[in-house]
Figure 1 (cartoon, chains in turn purple, orange):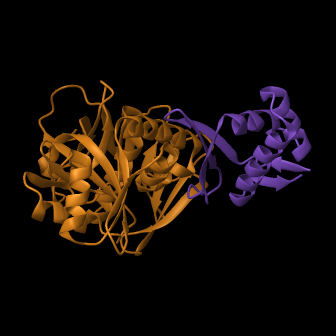
Figure 2 (tube, rainbow over the protein chains, first blue to last red):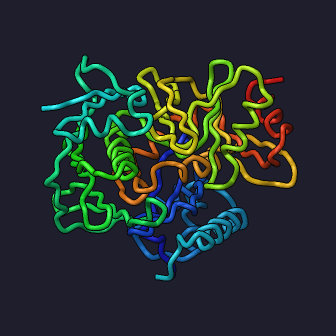
Figure 3 (cartoon, each protein chain N blue to C red):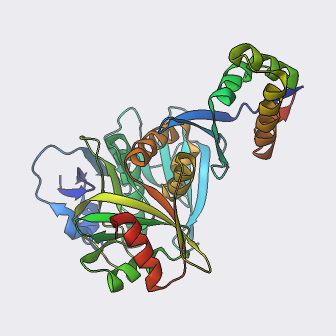
Length: 91
Length: 286
């Protein structure tokens, strides 16, 4: 099970969803990423609860009518990106 | 009560309260921005000797004045922001009264000048302005703003423009004011905060481009994506703003407006004439 880092905030910048880690006296803006549409959807649906990759895959398949392989690939890419930027925690 | 007006970044600031007003006007370059009191000010800065910081939650601290002093930025239980230099409170800003700030009159000119910069950065944000750490060259009626960490060669690059590109002059070499104006256009102004090169210009120019510089073994230039452009500009904005959510919200909104209108490039460069020709021809067309 994993969780999205609660110290994360998405702001719209020039039409893109820009994601920053927040809070504390050591606010680190050197790590800033952008969410595409499907990442943004997953963020909105999953930000308040622990989840598994399967949960995320199911959400993408439901919303976008994509096949299992594509959805899994998108989820894996997002998970990797989030881990790399310390935006994913173990639940 | 003694008072004086300063026009900085297109905003009228009224400085009031005691002998400190006259002292502030004697700061290097400040007189260029002084104006006769006229229209109602956008912002009022009141000097008050009695400022004493209440207990605060620390948001950010950093060294200033060549490491001689620690500046702390904090917020109290009422949501009022406080800056201190060492033990002394120097700037107080209540976001419920965003067009005003209190300052301590400080005897040391460098400290006073920096306190004014902090007060300006807090009060000007609500008016779509912020000081940005950069070196700015004016060329053919527009401005090019060079961004980068200290020591990456911003001033060197603007100097190369002055040497090799016609119709150029320096607008500011340290902390010009970036503005999103009422009509939505993006402009940059000279400011009293340009101590590195004593370049104090009461001048406004539309912003042609932002250039984020990196020292490289050859000269290359690339237009940045939205995400990259944000990453290029944000670190050059007043650091304290990144440590408070409401300030960060406003700063990000301003950055968003700016990068939608103005191209942002990454320039990898040598300190040579070709670098200036490359950036100039990219921005102005050859």
